[in-house]
Image 1 (cartoon, rainbow, N blue to C red):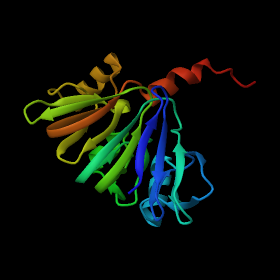
Image 2 (image 1 turned 30 degrees about the horizontal axis):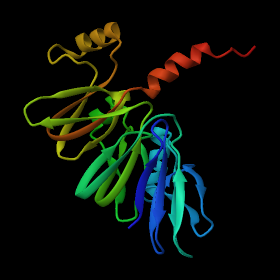
Image 3 (image 1 turned 180 degrees about the vertical axis):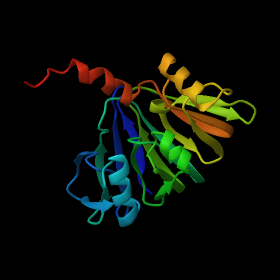
Length: 234
């Protein structure tokens, strides 16, 4: 099985050492360098139909990279598309959901599927629109985030509320519900009004037992800040 190693503490590379016969999958454009013994191919994510639907609805890359060690052992270095932390999750016959832009790479033993959300989640959430990435199996799963990553573990008693732009990944053992407000009471108009006043936007409510990975930076918030700073075209 391929070995996943982080190189560097700030904006690290993900180095993957493959023995002959190993194969990994990575986000499109993630390969920074690799030895000549490795072969890189493009492959539709989660099947052709799901890949096309995800591309159309969320704007994510339709293809991912398939890197294999057919001629002999080799090493590939992968880099996320945005600056931030990379976290390797050692999965043991379990399942994780990954939000938009959070997937970086995984072993070939990990099964990747695009999972349909409930209609309410598709309308109110921003973690993949109608679809989110579902990773199942045993092996290494690498996720990345804009900024640092912290892990929060729920014990089955408390509810965790996370701003949607800061959600990286979470275990399937958790219940999750998108919401337009952190308030538990009030009607839909009251919640929308409170959300607009506080600027909190869409949040994800997690409950049950399991782990959630949260990023210190939000890509949507950064884009909202950046766009007005750009020079306007005349």
